[in-house]
Amino acid sequence: MKKLFVGSLPADTTEESLNELFSQYGTVRSLNLIKDLFSGKCKGFGFIEMEGHEARAAIAQLNGKTFNGNVLSVKFEQEKKGHRGRRR
Image (cartoon, rainbow, N blue to C red; front, top):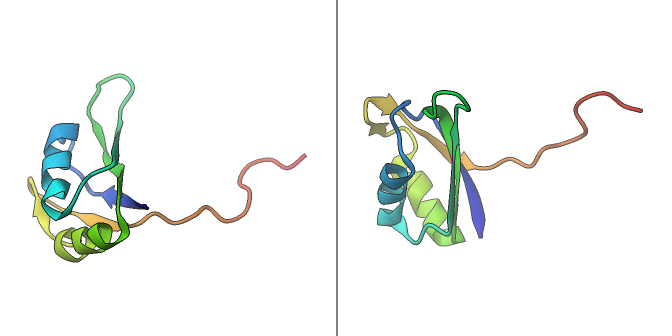
């Protein structure tokens, strides 16, 4: 299972529209669209989990492509390195 970062999403993006877009390349196992707490609109990014070969196909086909007027950024999620914040 691979987790993808999807960036440059339009504010009017819904979970349904994102699921429909990615399901063309395989089964979407989970989808987390990051939304603004107050407005409920998409903050411009989200995360999707798919099987490895399906995730690679989605990246190859969707990275740099236009979706509802925005050019998408689709890549594997980067593991956070180190600890951010205050050390004790």
